[in-house]
Image 1 (cartoon, helix red, strand yellow):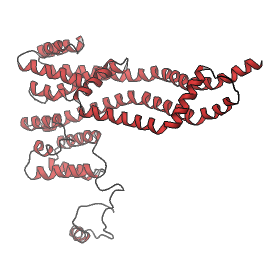
Image 2: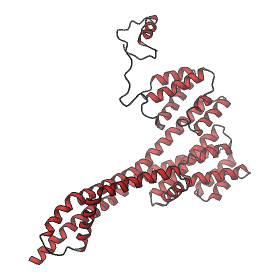
Image 3: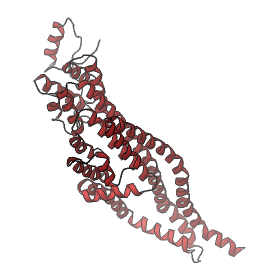
Length: 385
């Protein structure tokens, strides 16, 4: 029988195990992870699983302190285990779940904490946790679909650039040495490739610094400059096919987050404040904030949505029907499901659409270089012939 248990030292743990009727053969400290005791950071997926586990246990009647102890014991990520242990200790000491989670604002965002607070106030915490778990699972699935849509073309383009660089640095100079023996003037297209090769061979380090610096600069600006972030988000929404996927994803997030918060009993204006940051796009974030401002002065949600001129007619009409029928959260859930399915379909279609386009792109880049290198040989053969 093997196991783990927290203790100050091995002797104290041996004594504790003997009191439990267990005679241990070996008691030794748990080895630290290879890259330090902190472990990897806590992922959004782990938070989603945590919410589902906690909701399931509380619905089964397990007290929250005991549920957190069980969940902590099953964690492989030391950071996650330490966080759950911290939550358990705070709640056992008399803190509310909302207060305990507020100490971890990175892992439990404003939406999560507000929903928990609403659930605690209304005495329906286990139901709210179940709603949060479903919300987190759907959100992570949607994020995965978007990453899948963007990852494939990005990787293929990166491979095409690397292959082109290898050809220019290692292959083209070999051809250039052969061309010098011809003594004839090179075709213009071949000369362009040779000049590019010479530049890259001489200044490859400068090009590398420029590329890395540009990427890091864009990331830095995106994180630090709201204006630049807004420009990039607006630009992405205008890209053919990809832009439509991002539109649908933002609408799906908006609808699901609003429905989840509203269903949990969070006041509408406060819910919209939370929803703004959950759309994943600053264009939609600003639009939702304008909707919140309009709703706070008496506008209906559907009228406020119509005025920002960003949401499709169907979404506005579904919101209007939901408000009139007193089933606003139900309608928003329907909108979320529809647009999440649209994203799924679009991502699947994108893979089929992009594959031939990428093949053409690689063919033009690599094939163009090969043709450029062989043009002088064809020209010489024609002259000899």
